[in-house]
Length: 281
Image (cartoon, rainbow, N blue to C red; front, side, top):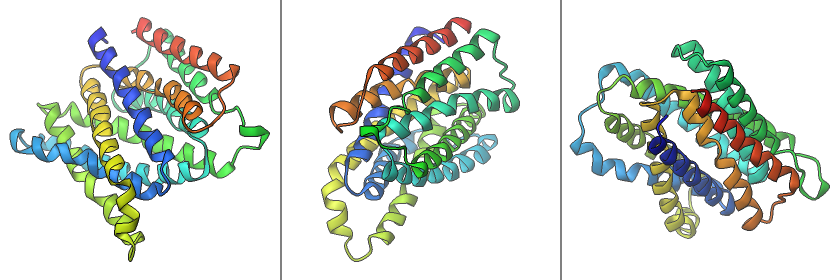
């Protein structure tokens, strides 16, 4: 992976942690998530007239991606309802690189070298370990952990689907724009139905923040999909998941969540694993 691509993926990681923190911090997380997803689709409307349709070979992947993203959006709301950002975000994002590495080997023929495999395992272990410092000495919420693991499965699913789908069309921008455009309205309709009778009151406080978060989310995942069209899937996903370091810092500084010495060490382990993955490639 070239240095410019690495830099952009790291930027995408920072953006991803930022919009997740916005969803976690706001009161009505379903509404906030719906506005974020809808906001991520708005730029696509301006792009679609200027790009061709994706190649037919990519359509099944595009459809699967939209479906998996809907599951991801719903389970992410459940996850943040029951757990701290610095607890559940590392679990969800930290297990995904391992799943993607296995899936990319099985489905895309991308075998990892021993050094690359070690990098994925080390990075994932560091990311997951960020989740184990308990807040105020209280026990972890089992529901939060279960929802985070299901979210991880969804992350791995759409990462693999989009990585293989974007490689089956001539222009990555076309696939990215259609994915965001098709995904945008579905969760919004669910949220409107769930907040029936008080839609204006529920949506108004979150409108600006949610739409801004959507623009950040669109840029973050658009960069990731573009990078997957150029580099091995496991490399991109493992590097992108270094976003958990920033998420842990945001959880501490803005959300009042703990960040002790163990998490500092875990952050260093994540960086070491990501570096090892790149060296091994």
